[in-house]
Amino acid sequence: MKKIDYVINQRGNDIYTIDPKFTDSSLPRLPLGVYILKQSQTGEFFMERKGDRFEFPFKKYPIDDEFISYVLKRYKSKKKNFGILLNGSKGAGKSVISKTIANELNLPIIIVGTNFSNLGEDFISRLSQPCCFFFDEFEKTFSNGFPINVRDDDDDEDYERDRDKRRASTAGESLLPILDGVFSTDIPHVFLFTTNVLSINSNLISRPGRILYSRTYKNLDPSIVKSFIKDNLKHLEYEEELLKEVSQLKVITIDIVKAIVDEVNIMGVSPSKALEYLNIEKTGVIVP
Image (cartoon, rainbow, N blue to C red):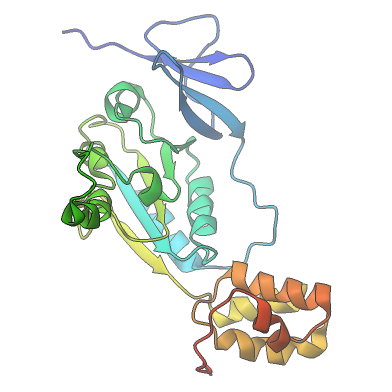
C-alpha cells in the first residue's frame, strides 16, 4: 500500500490541519508556536495556534535550571522519542520548568488536553517533523487510557473500592505504543508530562525507553522563597517572621507563599496571624 504524504494546511489565521493533499495554503512545515490540539465534530484533527511560545506573566525564578540545561543538552543527541515526566504539588514549579524546556527546544509545541483514542494513528503518524507534545496534569486527562469495563452493580463494594485504583493504573496506557515509536519510527518527538499525583500506568515508571527523565518537586528551594518574599512583601518588618513561618509548612510552593504574602500585604497582619485563618497546613517543625 502506497504511503500517503501529508501536508500542513493553514485555514484562516490560527487553524492548521494535516491533510493528504496540497492546497493554496499548504506550508512546508508547521511553524514554530504553541498549538492546542482539537478534534472536529467529524473526528478530524486540527491545531489552534495560541501564540509564538509559552509566556510567563510573572517573574521567573531559577527553579532547577541545572536540570533544564541537562535536558536540552541531552536532546541534541536523541534520535528517538524523548519523554520527560515532572511530578509534584501544584505551585512547586513543574509547569514553569516544563514550559521553559518546551520553549528552548525550538520545536512546535502541541498541547494535548484531551484523551484522543486515535492520537497516534490519525495525528502523530502524519507529522513529518519533530514536535513537542505537552500533557499538563496528565493523570487527570489520561486516567482511563483504555476503557475500563463499567458495571451497573453499584452494590458491589469491592468493585467500587477498587475502581479508582484501576483507573489510575491505566493512566497513559493508550500512549505506550506512541512512546515506543510505533507511529513515528523516523521522527523523534518530545513528550512532556506534568502530574500532581504520580498515579499513572506502571509501564511508564522506570522505563527510560519511554520516559527518559522523571523528576519530583515538593518544596521550593529556600533561596527562591527568600527571593520571592523580598520581591513582593510590602511590610519588610515581617520578613524574618515570614521566613520562619514558611519553614514550618508541610508543603512549600509558590502558590502557598504568595497566599501568605498577599494576606500580609492586604490585611496588614503578621504572618503568624495570617496563617491562623489561611487554609495552609503546618508541621510545627522549624526547618533551619
